[in-house]
Image (cartoon, rainbow over all chains, first blue to last red; front, side, top):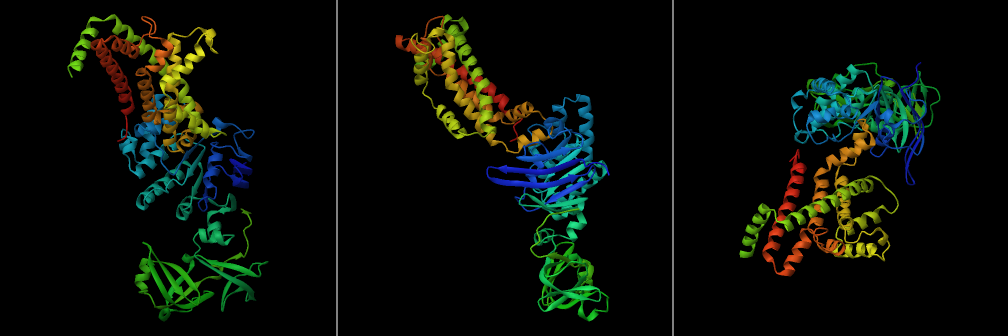
Length: 367
Length: 232
């Protein structure tokens, strides 16, 4: 296996007595998109600034595959580029802004012209090139900011919550375009966000950060479906997280008691005692009680619908089965089944969809 | 009112006829204040950038002193510079008293806190992440500083205007260290004081109008550059 593009080890950043960042190790492979998610103040942006050589670490090393030794300020900065949450456009025209990084590299004017027009076309802002940067909408400004970073053909692109200031329709359009462009360019990307949906769409791997530490990192689906702590489960939208305790094994399944109720999970060795049980709402199916047929699903609970919340394409259906469980059901299915509040239904989920998190578990995991 | 109208007429006549006193005082004012503001810019803008972008112990005290310096009474500055440059003073050996360099030193001291203080606030008004963004686009440190100054030019040029306006129009310091010596250190302001003392109000008014016109012309030129490409 080839050497990672970026390797971080023992990285610490302190401001005064406060430790903002403390990362034992993190590697980013060439061509992958690593999304870093986590609550505000987790240290995500600080990590990006350190990688971009914009701040110096208190201790530790950030090693790039192309650099021998741990320091090469401008050389590194000229191989990467960064987009921030605010578009941070300079005064002047859109053209001036997109061309800025090439101008500071003393690129010949004729090449600048050609590259600016090409990247502007890619981002759908060709018509704005002569517009004043101050006259742009938030979405347009962020497209210019992304174009300004991409025109440099960086080996590593750092994106620090680039969608956070945009309204949902503008964000959706830009996200779709960004996804298309990043897939086309195949560059190495680190994408910081606190929006799960952005991470799910873009990421090859996902890292969860909290209090300056990387708590879990792995393939995106792995972190989403198998969070290693209650906090990560909550953050990645598991929604159905319950305290329980392992009661034993029957018919090859693990029996977990949630109060008076028992649910079945896939039996894996070494699990015992107090646990958190998490079931993602998209893995829960709902069927009206009068239509329920034997479905072979291990976990089947009768309950009444307490709430139906329209989320646009989906409904969040909250069912009280003795414990409250949420399910995401498409609008079409809600309509076809005629689901309504107070209706008696069956909520079902497969044993393999039950994820077990040992209680008190906050240790780091790498994958 | 008559005095103003009469002074205005006389000013035009004096300018057209190339009156020796007018030409001498005007050129010397421009030379002295122009050089002084240039020196203040060369020192004040980098110093302002340093104060705005770095953190060090005692930084707030230095910024406080700069801000206090923005209101320095020129006559007090003149007195201190004179005390240093007098033959018996600490820098008396330089023989600068009653010379143009002495006047420039005094005017630099008056303008420097204005240029520095305005630069600090100009840079601090920018988004703090802007310097990171500029560096992350591959700029060198000096390219980053130049871009920040360009982005903050509205306030930075206000600093230059304030500095130039303050020193071309002050009289206390240049009188004290320059002495208003004809053909050597006489500038517009000291000449006006002298003419008023002699009761020559017409010429004094003429010089005042020239001084006002010069100040306005310089400020207008800077305003023109300042407002070019503003967003609103």
